[in-house]
Length: 180
Image 1 (cartoon, rainbow, N blue to C red):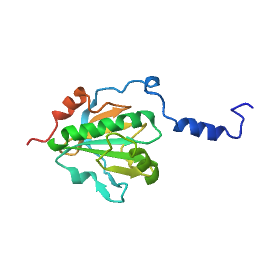
Image 2: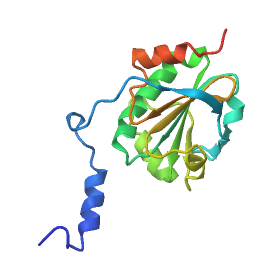
Image 3: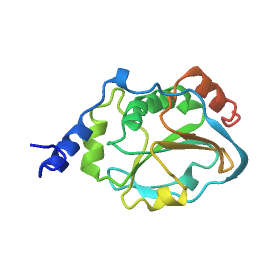
Image 4: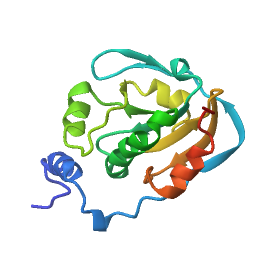
């Protein structure tokens, strides 16, 4: 039977999409954030986490905030997630916050995925079920990450997978941490 005309084609494709790709089959994660030439005020962000607790971006004012838009079906998103937690562990005490915004998925899907991660994320995992916040932030593809400075301005963007705990990224972020 021809796979393309098979009534099970959608099921086969869904099954293949759910299978993790071997790391050697994927391009490497990059190690740099793109500076925004003219920093701009970050759009509003108010979403519930996996427990239903609301989080607002403005409540993190005065901290450097990494806002990562992602989904469990996205291979580079899956690969970069542990590095976001390692970054939070490394710089969290210095005034860095990490927020992950899952786009278009439900609590059960995100919870099942995060339970497999090592290290497990300890930062807020927010749900943008209808993609409204991703649209306000002008997210065109996943993963997309923004860095918001202590004054609430977007200063960096990263489209595509990153190794967030790489020394180059850490150095870029360290220079924007709040003065202590």
